[in-house]
Length: 166
Image (cartoon, rainbow, N blue to C red; front, side, top):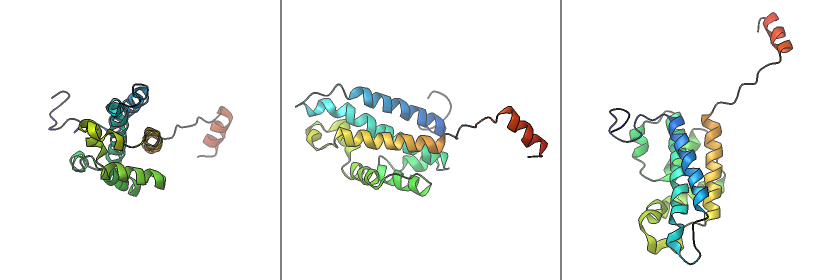
């Protein structure tokens, strides 16, 4: 095992590290959109699997950031609806349509279907819906994890605030 004595990969990863990994899967998902071929459902599997995995990683990162234990998060298996519900309780505000989509991804077991069910290719989520869900989750988790940048005060205001004891 690389990087420590963790029982599971990712056991000791930080929320920021998990988010960076999700960012890479998101980039890969966008790159894979050009590989699918019309009439060949299996050719779209990587373009479906990568966004689903990235979404799971983003939600994991937020749950870690909000204090959930890695073992607890692992216990949710690939249930995006459970993760999204817990994340929503911790201040992640997703659109209702996105929450519904995450629920349908979980109910349809799309994570597993895209990974090893080529005969189910015609039943996978539309890529534009999947990409929209990925982009919304990415933006909102990123905003929740990354602190807002500090704005430097102009020198004239900085001197005034020091003079007033602020």
